[in-house]
Length: 302
Ligand code: PSU
Ligand code: MN
Image 1 (cartoon, rainbow, N blue to C red):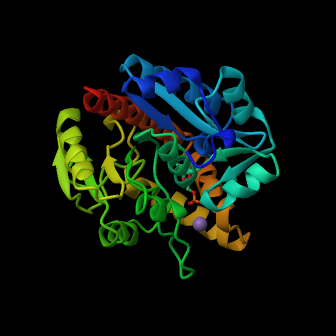
Image 2: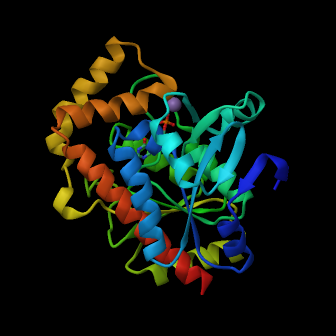
Image 3: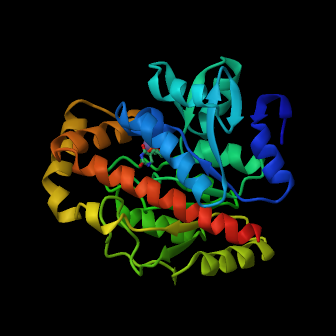
């Protein structure tokens, strides 16, 4: 760790890591800025429980008063979920958050940065950031972090609000292997299909663990992305969302919503306009991904 005074690793996670037991990192931006209250808190706690039930130790990552926490207490999870003063922290914000003693919720990029330095190798999330639509080149720092951090990230593809084709190309350019977990197409967040192919299909946690093992042995030094489709019963097919998404994008444009505020705005707009269907899908895929990540982590630990 760069400076252990800045990191607070929960004792349970410290001993799990020391003993080589399975640990799964969870992000906190989805709690603070991705889901509405009170579902955000319920989901955060439920994800930890799911990881435990699968035999791994959950490590939710967030910043509390300028310290990088790996594993939160129940009170800290509540604080991240309920406080109005939680910043969205990507890689570029980490130093400022520490210097100015912020509370912060870490994005995929921020979570990877912290988790990797704490030696956590598996990470479950909903959808990664990627290349945004539109003419301005807005590329999430999630992608560049994937390109330089050797972790396994379990997700349901990139968020549907993005330019999925451009995001897929970006992953290929930077040598990030995309594994389809029980699928041949890269999932599109709320939807199971994107029309974009994965690099390899794996049908079990064991198969994924083998690929990760080889990547590690080769010292590839990039992330492996395991993409898991949203459970069928709550899927919202992309075609059904087209209008809702177009309206949300147009509204963001009219209101000049950009940068870190764009993704949360689009997600909450879509949840409202879909009568909660996208919210149900988002929660279900988060839960499913947490379980898959824990199963993979358990296989690697064995
Ligand atoms: N997955 C979700 N909901 C979210 C996010 C992911 O189901 O809110 C968050 C992640 O933390 C991701 C961030 O890193 O959105 C991407 O934000 P941006 O596009 O501003 O990089
Ligand atoms: Mn951006």
